Length: 100
Image 1 (cartoon, one colour):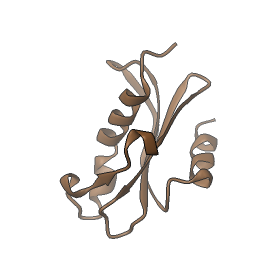
Image 2: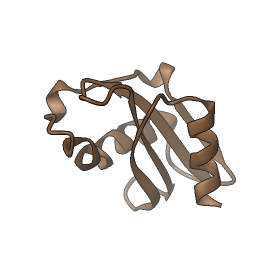
Image 3: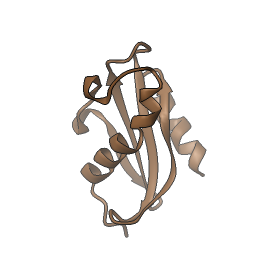
Image 4: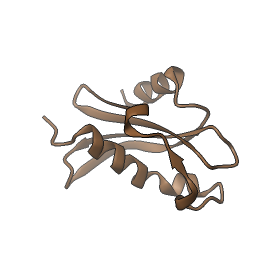
């Protein structure tokens, strides 16, 4: 059982992936993240996965993603980064397949 909430994972994922978005030469303040309600944050087999669409980069659309287990005070990152393209079903399937 994880002590994470969907909102915890959403916020952690945004913070953890900032360096992957900054390579575009964009300051974090200019990024526009999809709200939690418009993002995918789900727990699958004890692992939390998040995929958040964002705009404000030269390569729109872009999404950030992460997979994490553990607890809020001791997260265990299984993967995170940024990808080109929308945060759609195909990108979600790729994220889940990469953690197995």
